[in-house]
Length: 296
Image (cartoon, rainbow, N blue to C red; front, side, top):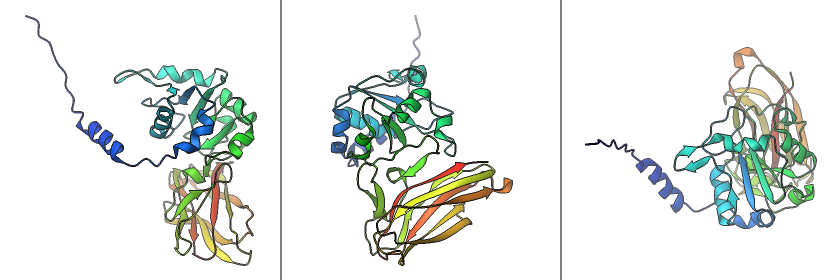
């Protein structure tokens, strides 16, 4: 007699999640992706979903999978059969030249304060220099053969990538209490849903900073006159220690950059960093992006 050992596992938590996601109305605007997927046969994502990676964050994979499935395209995956994962299958994206009619996507480096030219794989750097890439959601997306204007003037909320700078917390990936994303392409920004409601228009990203000197930047605009006080901004650690703060005035519709440097002491190392903007319900306020980059 041969004894067969059967191993069972409770999949009810996973099943509950699937049912929840299926019942939740999708926030994806599929039509915004039409121009992209008209030019795509296959999607290549790194790191692969289900694979741990010490250098790069994962993209919002559920959205990527849903959009890819919606348009009936192929996507690379770390899964070979059920729960068997082959994480080596995605390593080609770090070395191989990009191919036509392929969409390439990579999550941002876990060190969000380092220059992108020092952290991204060479194929992505080459594509960025050709203007073939843009920041969408929480990753870098590249489409070989397109010009920078494809992303700049496109239907998706996007942000231009500067290799000499660190990760940008763009409109599509910024937290907000009272705002929503408006505009497309590189003109995407966060603005209040209700111009009469005061509240945090942007906050986060809640990343831990090591000791050292950092350069920060905040890009914003307001249609009102430069004499009108429309909001406040600050940089804090652990939501309790203000590092620097200031006022936001109208810009007559032009994008203005606030920038400077801060020093994080060894005793403050590891604390959660935020760039915050508070809308005063006076006039209007639009946030394009913010960033923090270690310089020393």
